[in-house]
Length: 97
Figure 1: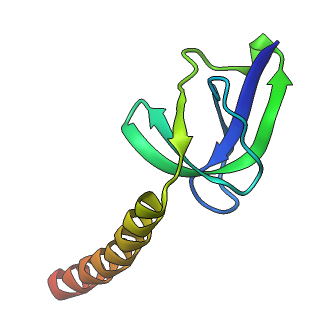
Figure 2: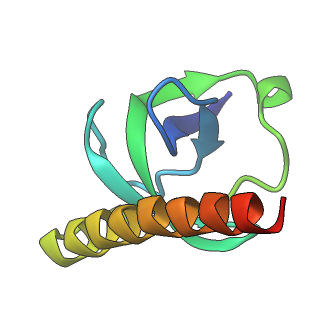
Figure 3: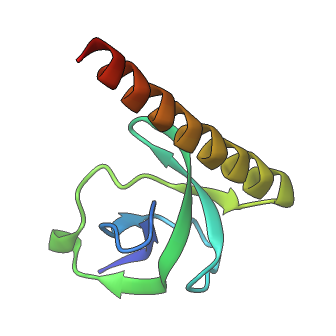
């Protein structure tokens, strides 16, 4: 059995397992995780629990820490920028038909 937490990147999204590294997390907490794409912000969807080794995709990446206020501010700012970038992209698609 492997100790994991479940993390989502967006509401209703897929849950990915991460190694909590002796830290305890509760459902709903914001976390910073190490992924194959780099460091990312996520939401703990499932607190610490054990799963069969066969349910874990290796290598199991680590949870780096609970998100700080600064992490949460940065995440909110990036979400705003993401929305604006999407609008600009849609406009350019329309302009170029």
